[in-house]
Amino acid sequence: MNQDLKKTLWAAADKLRSSMDAAEYKHIVLGLIFLKYISDAFDERRAELEAAFADESHDLYLPDAEDRALATEERDYYTMVNCFWVPGPARWETIRANAKQADIGTRIDGALDAIEADNPRLKGILDKRFGRAQLEPGKLGELVDLISTIGFTSSEGHHAKDLLGEVYEYFLGQFASAEGKKGGQFYTPASVVKVLVEVLAPHKGKVYDPCCGSGGMFVQSEKFIESHGGKFGDISIYGQEANPTTWRLVAMNLAIRGMDFNLGKEPADTFHRDQHPDLKADYVLANPPFNISDWGGDRLLDDKRWVHGTPPSGNANYAWLQHILHHLGPRGQAGVVLANGSMSSNQNSEGEIRRAMVEADVVEVMVALPPQLFFNTQIPACLWFLAKDKSKGGRDRRGEVLFIDARKLGRMDTRVTRVFDDEDVQRIATTVHRWRQSGEAGSDEPYADVPGFCRAVKLAEIAEHGHVLTPGRYVGAEATDDDDEAFNEKMERLTAQLAEQMTKGAELDAVIREKLGGMGYAV
Image (tube, rainbow, N blue to C red):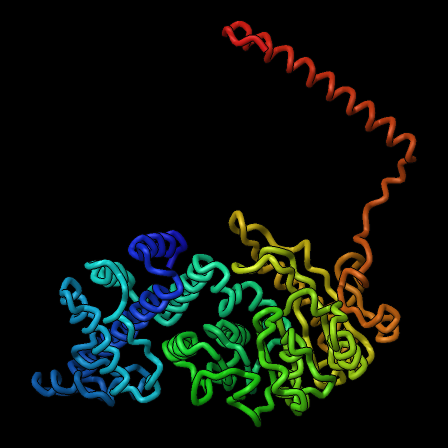
């Protein structure tokens, strides 16, 4: 689906929102997109079956027309290819036919109930709020008509779930922007997720996100595996999310892509009701909420997760880092988005915890990010990459941390938001991979420090800087070309150039005054 069409769809959908809050409207729109997708997928499978039943050379051939009609309504023919069974009242053509009825909201809720009843893995996931939606009369029906224009069928080499993913991710991003501050609680910009995934390179194993939001980390991990020749399903997905509506949102996002997942028995607070207490993950990817002060740390003072020190009750940053370390397996790696302050803060116990983590040699890579990457906050952010054992997964990197200053990378996508292009993502990821593999068989080029961008630093030097982990402190200044021109000569040349430009400026001013005077507008 091209970008212009997605923009058109968003503009139309946003217009229908009227006075409804974006945070509420989001679930209405994404719920309908979900319903349209599974109905389209069902219809596509039904067409395949009809063709197979009528084809004498096909294993599923049925000579009797009545038998064919009955067989197309056999649930097993759909579930055998991982297609959701959609009962008659829940099919999109039925919903669209009743879009202008006053009770369309209640009908949609009933359709979702019917889908849950016939698809156990969706039980308790679908958000049934259409009957009580505070939309103006007729707006829900108009929204149904709009969503009807999106065709989620495989064509021109595109898989239906990929088209769905494009629309889903685009709308999530737009809603995050519309919601402002609230949106960032669950949405991580796609380009930041790509950096995390490309650096960690999760090929197979257990992937965990303790604050998984809409599931972007998982989706990108699956995309990475498929793009590198791996098989769909090579990773096992574990997540946790406290917000009940967002918990349903991530479950829907993963279910429609056919991904197996374990989000715990219920939405729950990660610190106080860990849904995966015994999990040891191969990879952890996380974007926890920045600097949260009301995380209940005073009730967890002696928690077994605080190996490197008890986090302060007024800031959860180091609670997140230690929770993540606790859930890493012996060779596990993690990528975490945090506020810049986490790299240098000495408030309460944070400086001591950071020192203990550095000395324990679990900090692998630190990346400073440019501003304006996130929809919801101007707080500068950074990436922490952690590893349980830096002697594995490449050369022995123990006693060393790689610092990358990526603040000059990226471009402004809109007036207020910045994005990383693919070449930015690859520059960061390639730098890390070369550093990890430098000198190892199979490495493409040896790693080299680049002034102003990256530098590998020994733990002793980090200790000299009070265990501050800000990349700018270590990478130095960017190298500049030395033109060998003497200072006095350069100043004379530049001064003469400036004088010439000022003379031309004065001449242009005179011409402008003359022209304006001729028009009766003397200056």
